[in-house]
Image 1 (cartoon, rainbow, N blue to C red):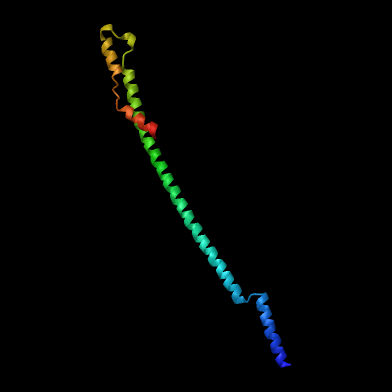
Image 2: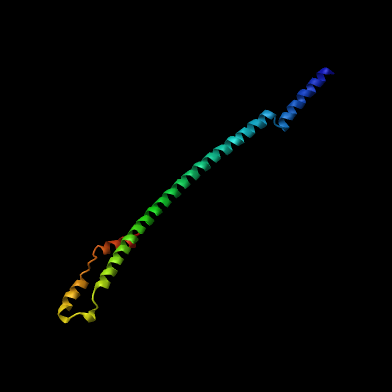
Length: 126
């Protein structure tokens, strides 16, 4: 009877291996799944870092352009204030003598703020 019992046990062991994985096999499957998820996580992390870096570069470029625009606007404001000062200092046309009218026309048509035009161009480009 003892031999039959050992044979039954071997048979049970063989059939149990086919039906259910052993603890070692289950541990290996779990370890494999964890390694696979770890690799996927690492790839996703690298993609996230790349996207974040690209986004940061875009933000830095936008900030740089906005700073250039702000500087151009500040310069333009200074020129406008200067031009308004010149305009308020001029005599009204009705108060001018006919003899000095041509000199006044020449002074007003010759722009004293020729450097203003490039600033307008820079502001429009920004």
